[in-house]
Amino acid sequence: MPSGRCRSRATLFVTAFVLCSAACGTFVTATALGTAPRPLVPRPPESVRVLASTPPSEPHVDIALLEVEQVEGLNRQGTDYMIQRLREKAGELGCDAIYIKSASEHAGDEDGTLALLDPDTHSLLAACIVYTPPESVESTARTP
Image (cartoon, rainbow, N blue to C red; front, side):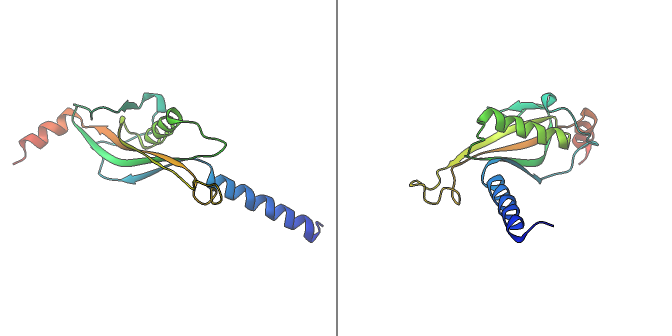
């Protein structure tokens, strides 16, 4: 049976791991916005179109707002990794495309004394887009 000292070390290790995981990494959150015009099925991330300069010209619905936040740490991967994580989440949701709406940065603790509590962060905000089937556009146009 492990001694109290071993359990304390194990508890300390697990706590440190959880805190490091929370303080370092790239996280994606999704907030539902609207109803999809058709049933959605998960799709491969590489099939999700990425738009940044203008939203698509095709009829579409924004079904979710995606935010990816990257906390600066040992595992910082950069913007390309953040976009990949957005595509992965959009693929899970069944979205056809993402439209990157904005990017922001937060400069954390400058002198480093509170760097773990207030690290540098970078974030991207994107709309998760589903294209509207042509028959939906026609029926909407006929409805008074």
